Amino acid sequence: MPPTMKAAVYHGARDIRLEEVAVPTPAAGETLVRVLRSGICGTDASEWINGPKVFPVERRHSHSRHLGPIIPGHEFVGEIVTADPDSGLAVGDLVASGAGVWCGTCRRCREGRTNQCVRYKTLGLNLNGGMAEFVSVPSMTLCPLPAGLPLDHAGLAQPLAVGIHAARRAGARDGDSVVVIGAGAIGSFVLAGLSHLGDFDITVIDFPGGRLDRAARLGAARCLSPSRSLVDDVRDALGGRKPDVVIEASGAAGQLARALELVTDGGRVQAVGIPKGSPEIDIHAMVFREITLETTLAHVCDTDLPAALRILADSPLGGEFSRAPVGLDHLSASLDDLAAGRVEGKILIDPSQEALA
Ligand SMILES: [Zn+2]
Ligand SMILES: [Zn+2]
Image (cartoon, rainbow, N blue to C red; front, side, top):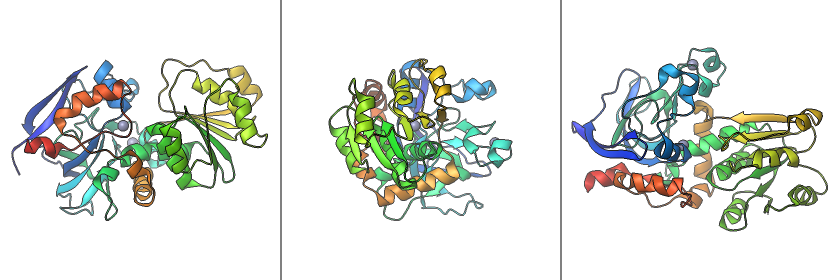
């Protein structure tokens, strides 16, 4: 084991430096992982542009705010280098990591809602994460990869787990018609989660083009594009009924209000992730139409991460999103591209590329 490693270190907005740092020493209950793929998402892009916000964890729990430099990366897969004897995992095993670390003893943890743990910490935001050659993580966040799953596909496991969690919380029942607004990465991961969880009639809404073509390949029964008459268009497409469940996965301005217009009386609307600004919604109409508004955050490691890996092994999703990985030296430029909306698919970093350079 070399004593030092290459790591991307976040110092503040638009300030990530490639540094030579000590290889972490795993504490009890931790596993040392050689990182093979490490993804970035909108959370990282937001930290890059506006950070450090470390949103949303320490808004609720100010004691957990990480103030010093930190290694980002909460979406990673790798190979076990030093195994935790209690984990059931061995040196050389390939694993995906969840993003969050939970205590296991608080009320929410005991309910199985470990993403709502009162002591929740996120790798890459509150603890050093996967944008380095090695990372030491609590063994409970690790899940073995299915045999033969390409690493570029496995690198999608954590964001897909977020989509599955959202799909679960949307509460659709078999036979329901479900509308997903937004066919970007998050919308696609929610769509994949819905297709995995039940027998739903799924309509996806986005602008015409490649995203909708992909949604059709991932299981949407039909795709529609936004228009002034969208509420009528959706109802017509569903044979005169409004949808039972509408999931807002675009984050775009006005779309949560749009979702509330689209859904049937007594139906459910879900806001996925964090909308831009503070959306105006018509609570008066919601009450009279008895609409349930659900939210969703992150994922539950023990259930959503294994489900994500099963989907990646069985579905075309990995091929739809994977791109050739780049080295750690491309991280800053990649975050710029992601923040500017210039990225289709999922950017994956392979920290070993930089190590060889
Ligand atoms: Zn993410
Ligand atoms: Zn807890």
